[in-house]
Length: 126
Length: 274
Image 1: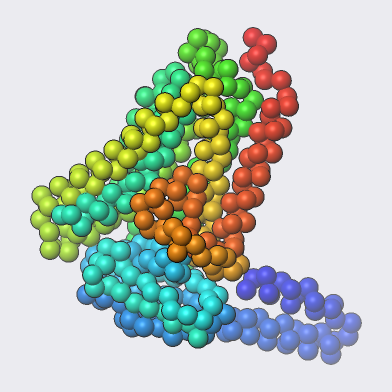
Image 2: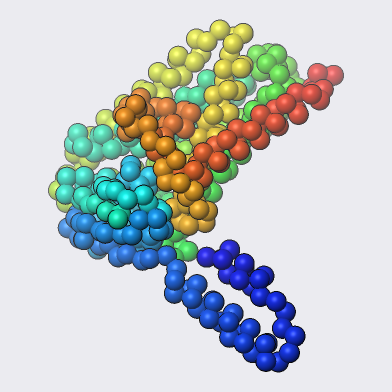
């Protein structure tokens, strides 16, 4: 996102008169807010009683996704997925971000390594 | 108990293999055992500290503190290994073999050992802090008794240590003639593997793009969760489904170290004159 912003800043020509200066400033503001809003899609994932909620997440293929995982249990968990190539410890009560993708269409199972029997989930990219 | 033993084994396996390799590589350096022990102990102490700060670290940088920490640890370890290989290329196999006889080499050897002890400490730190968190979670979960957790942990630790020792004893039986090139080749791949893991953490925290996830999929051939897969993952960085950025970091690191070694080799070693 930072790189995108820099590109926008660089491509904006220096203003020559007050009118274009105003519109340029407006454009830059719009571009910045657009970047902030059109950022990566955020998806909330909770861990409660050693289970993922929701257990199935549908995401658009070809886009980077930000998973915001909130561990509501009193014990740590490790989010792991071989298919997504991700691995991360989430301490008790912590809320962490995990970026995945962009993904090709398909199913990507994940699990909690510390409670493998119950903590299972799946990302479906379509 | 078995469940905790398996997870502790998985976590300690990687650190144990790294210790095994470094112990083999440094077998003729003076004061080696002291340095190795120092590395392991520092790593264990650090594990406790990192585990107790886990929540704080996780919350840093909008929930990506853990990735930054891991990437930093891996980057330092890879740099130390790179430095080792370049140092060895400069001073040659001769020095490594005769280090004990060369009084002058002790200071150099200590510098060398301190760098490698740091690699060990960092490997133990990374795996150890996760193990500590996991075991703590088992206890806090209340489903297992302290005795169960300790017994499982000890079993897993013993199995991990045994695999590290097995690798070590395999290595020290390599003929001296081949030893130098075998170990520097292995260290080169180990450092590249660490760089690739570092890239994965950086992509996970969105500091670098993943570039193609995955670039290829060889899980039909060798699953990286199998024992052999895990072994090769630690040693040479094998991954069944790597992202493009990991392959890029891997190749770039290998080329940089090879270039450094070649450059070092072309200059006369300092110690040869004394």
